[in-house]
Image (cartoon, rainbow over all chains, first blue to last red; front, side, top):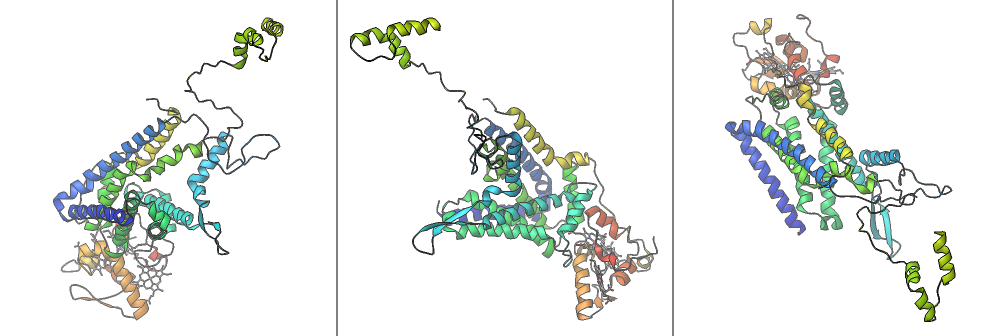
Length: 346
Length: 133
């Protein structure tokens, strides 16, 4: 799909979500639907869809070690193996997975290809910004999600309050600036900018890439608006969210319209999640190139569903035709006497 | 169809399920009533019509913004007079104005703040009303 079409299609889709959310917030009669029914349904779709997707992946057999590595595999004792890049034991696999999930090492190795300044030569440069932005984005997102737990837990656990305090340590303005929200918005904005500005990334981008970005930007944007621009009644909102989390739904009056837009965007994100590229949340654990041991030099992996092949080896062939081969003057490996000898031995 | 590594996949999915439904069993389905800020104080009882410096709905969502405006006005512009929506002029002061009327900080400010999980750091410097303690 042409890039402009992709962007426009995604913008229209997110725009439609925004319009629906606005209607849901503007019409009080729709508040129970948009405040309780849709979010709970979205959560159910998210959880069931996630499980379904993971099970569907688990149905694909992975009989061989197909780890992709950039380190020396364990082989002969005098060759030093790279235990984390090419793990041969279970715990090293766990180490590689943990580093991948927590620090995105695959992205750290991101390179870009360009023409050398010295002349028309291809050169590979280290491209760090994707890794930086991805780390910032994911950790900010995690922080934001954990901070939001204060709306869903009663009593609010101390670690969440601590995180809140750390996140707001700048103590600028009132309500105080919380760093993670801005980092989330900024990093998602950079990831969008990169997609649009780098021609080869733009070329491979589809609505499936733009839509989640626009959606997350809108979620972060409405959140920032509610906190810093159009203030909403937090106490009433917590009454609603706590009602959701304790399955005692209640929809108090006086909640701002922006809250319903925000909540509807989040509901759409949750329901869309299992069917989108965002499933890399579960997928990373299921990646055979990451979670398998690099032990193809240590063990002979046999494809378990190989059909049985009936072989007719040269030895058997010669046994069968030896006499006639000798008659025809063809060379044979064993003379008849030797063959009888070895047959006896067996 | 066969599911490979069913044991490991199940462990992963159970963890996933427990993490994402955490609030459901953490709260154990018990409802928590929202706070009811108490306005029974001497200063408010003395008013003929109990009103805040702005209308209640605005105050509820925007009082921190108002406090910020007051602070900026006093500290940066040395302007301490605030005409309330009723026309009454108040001194812009956290301890002397807000806490004069809302001298029951624990039953008023804190009831909401505990519920919402915020703990304004203002009281590290500003005086808290003592009467009701």
